[in-house]
Amino acid sequence: MKTQPVILCGGAGTRLWPLSREQYPKQLLALNGNGNETLFQATARRLVPSGDAGNVVEEPILVCNEEHRFMIAEQLRAVGGQPKALILEPAARGTAPALTLAALHALDDDDPVLVVMPADHAIHDAAAFRAAALRGARLAEEGDVVTFGIPPSYPETGYGYIRFGAAIGKADDAIAAHRVVSFVEKPDQETAAAYVASGEYLWNSGIFAVRASIWLNLIRHFRPEVVEACEHARGDRSWDGDFLRLNRDAFATCPNDSIDYAVMEKLPAGANGAELAQAVVVDLDAGWSDVGAWNSLWDIGERDDNGNLLRGDVCAVDTTNTLVVAQHRLVACVGLDDAVVVETADAVMVASKDQAQNVKQIVAKLKADGRQECFAHRKVYRPWGSYDGVDSGERFQVKRIVVNPGASLSLQMHHHRAEHWIVVRGTARVVTGDDEFLLTENQSTYVPVGVKHRLTNPGKVPLEIIEVQSGTYLGEDDIVRFEDSYGRS
Image (cartoon, rainbow, N blue to C red; front, side, top):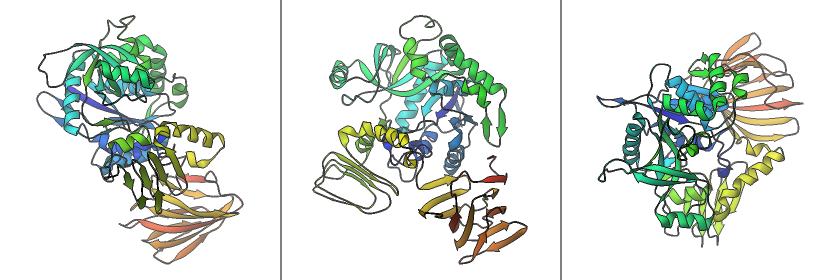
């Protein structure tokens, strides 16, 4: 059996604002308590590429937003991974089109079992996950569409549920599998309690196993317009280094749909397509969480004797059952209970824990008001490194720029601003107009308005500079690029 991991790297994580932002969503953050390992990196390591006589696990196919491509590629490289393909979605269209793109790519040279995983889940027992994934993959190899269900530990209203029926396999199988009776939407509290009490329901994890050809047959049957749009988008595909680019206009015609809505919920009913495959659910008892909101992070974290999960520089007095995340300064709490406090460089969010699911309403309001805090952090990551907006005012802006060893910014020009660069660490190779020279620590240079310039780190340590911008307009869109190592226009 050939197993092809597919990691769906989309999602905005709006309920985890202000840590998760549109341009740096939760899958790129270290939220699961495993040091600096991000949720995406942990997902990528769950099914390690391997091969034996009975099972070959391939390098993962990644499907991600074009805006996140460099961060995804760098995070995978940092944990020793190499994608089989990194497919760029020109626009967000949901999990069904994303899986369809992965299946079409996988089917180019084989018909593997796809093990489909969102990039933003936390799973504490990796061995238990691999065992369940192998059980599901074997069922999928036989033609079933497999989803993985989490035994519910309490009546959660933030998850969908799966009602299961007849068991599959032997009574003494280590990992249970059942036919799916129905998928149900997120219930209210009373209904969720009834589901848990019945013993007939599992939480819907959003993880799947299905052969590539089976998925394409099903999506073509239930949502043919999805396959049509994906095939047209791939018909004009091209490779941009490690990235597989699709036709933007063709993909824009694709409907927005999820795997559950497009296919899974229609299979148990047995109508119009059930002859193509049966829905099966495999028990996944591996310490799973979708880390969907701040209270779920509190649930899975290591808490102190007062039930608090404290990260960063936190002083808590007479505080219980509270999550506090401090990133840039001391956060002091007195007399809190069942609360969430999250501090970042440019925002502080305070909420009752039972209202944590509603943080997305804050993001919606900020977006409606045109506030940049919903889109990006003060620190912004680029393929060459990062910059942090230290200060700004009328006609000026100050940034701390870090350029990775061997990396280079584009050869560029600005119409409305001049720049002063001061090196505080490392060595910079600078191009301004027709001049090229090196700067070392405590040296500086000036880039006038309208002059072509470039900044490169030729050294082996990160280059750090302070950039002072001055001019009539300081927006990031005042950039004319002439050459770029990363394919940005």
